[in-house]
Image (cartoon, rainbow, N blue to C red; front, top):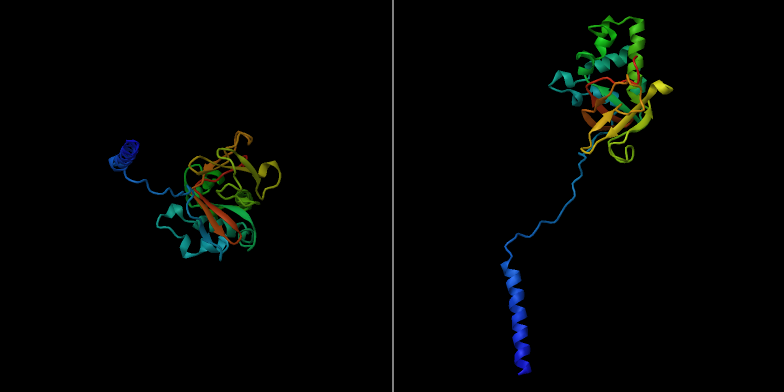
Length: 217
């Protein structure tokens, strides 16, 4: 009799297990694979930022996205060496055409319609503008330079002293923002980076469509 009960219990347990296995119609969940929010880095490590901007790879079908005016400004102000020293670890805010021509941008600031109209004083102001857009440190979009989201980190541009301080942060969608820090003067000017993390052999570049400042130039 005990053997009969033991067999009965065994068969009941087996039937219950079989029912549990066959009664679930949910599909097997696929294996989770982590995908970073950060896109693949765009690398041009065989070129300086200046060489890349002069290359066909930098040319866009949309004129506002190009660097024609930026290259002209770099040549006019004699700053080619600041953009062409292989081995530097700098950050370059790369000014697209729109940063010169749009309302309230560099041409409006300098009260000209083209770079050819600048006198010596205007060229000096333009040189200062460009120097503020070079950070003397390597600031990419990752956690090494900007470890905590929505936190502003201060860096030094090629303009010395307090007037040369610039801030960066990254938000929860990993967008990079420039000069949003409360610690900066109230008349500081910021922007959101358009395209991030172009890796060159002299640093990292970020495309911007607006010029930025710590205080008025």
